[in-house]
Amino acid sequence: MLTIAIPKGSLLKESIKVLQEVGLDFSAFLEPGFRQLQIEDPTGRAKALLVRNGDVSVYVEYGQAHLGIVGYDVLREQGANVAHLVDLKYGGCRMSVAVQNSSPYKSPLDLPMHGRVASKFVNCAREYFKELDLPVEVVYLGGSVELGPITGMSEAIVDLVATGNTLRENGLVEIETLFYTTARLIANPLLYRLNSDGVADYVDRIREVVAVS
Amino acid sequence: MLTIAIPKGSLLKESIKVLQEVGLDFSAFLEPGFRQLQIEDPTGRAKALLVRNGDVSVYVEYGQAHLGIVGYDVLREQGANVAHLVDLKYGGCRMSVAVQNSSPYKSPLDLPMHGRVASKFVNCAREYFKELDLPVEVVYLGGSVELGPITGMSEAIVDLVATGNTLRENGLVEIETLFYTTARLIANPLLYRLNSDGVADYVDRIREVVAVS
Image (cartoon, rainbow over all chains, first blue to last red; front, side, top):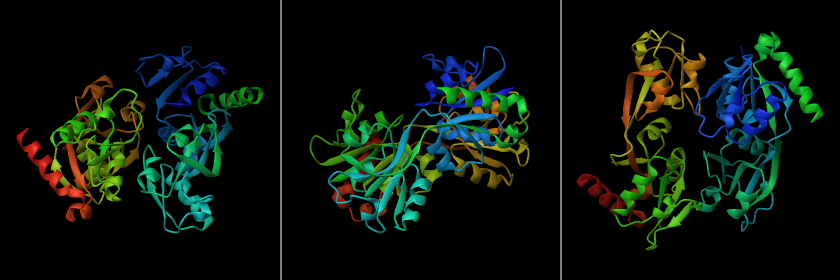
């Protein structure tokens, strides 16, 4: 049966909406108190797994899901072996470098050599500073990355920014954007190539729905 | 000023209690809707950072916090360069291998060679199966690890178990315990050795409080 890995959190609602538009209803995941992590569409044509953002590409890469929906930021950080198929257009944010308001750094190149940058997206951060040819130590933090500069552990952070409110509340300011990100439809390359369980047809329909929206 | 990294989540309440018993009050973190991530004790003698479980040892290792409280499971998984000082006795759980009820595996050695094991604790899992001399592929999942065997992606999981309710709800059963874990008091080795900001005295008092409790 066609299986789709859907991410918990900020992309969930829009992901369920786009699947509804191609006739697959997984809205049960939105019911308060709903605890199942795996459900079938009422028509019995497809199954959905509700997983963490970071786990979507694992299920797709190992072929436990034909399709997945996940942010481009996560795909870029993980570099998973999956087919990137459709830009779904929602969930827009940017990956940015930010520093304290009070700091003298107006651009990433102002940062001191061998300084520290805190991030959950250590691969994105390392790649960016390598391209700049600025040697920095990238420190992994799993959450509340703003605390890096506030506590003095790091000179800067690399983090996802949507509205910028969290940065402002913590006295931080963006000085550069690494890239923009939106939700993406991904597929297991082999299952997609074989059109297993009609996966390629669903992809075409999702592509059409996104094109006219 | 003495700085302590305290973990969000299940260890928070007890961690604040043990610090209260040595005269440091960070109970503001327990107030509903409280958003600050860094507060001072009302007496102005110490500061606390509220961070993710997995980030505690980062702040301690880099010296932004003298002390930290974190589960032994996380310490063992990360292998951070911090001093393990006191077993705080609360937050007890076990790291276990679990499989589906319906599976034929009664012990980890029954698992098929080159099978898959899903875990958030990939280093603990790899170390365990290496000692068993059983070659398995360990797959990282950041959450809902139970879905590994349910979807057929993995034959087993290695995960933290407190009550066992999550396993039972998902039709899984424990077949082995890797180790038991509790909350630990850790310190930055250098700051502890120098007794910076009186850190060693606080450690002694916490040790006494735990010994009589």
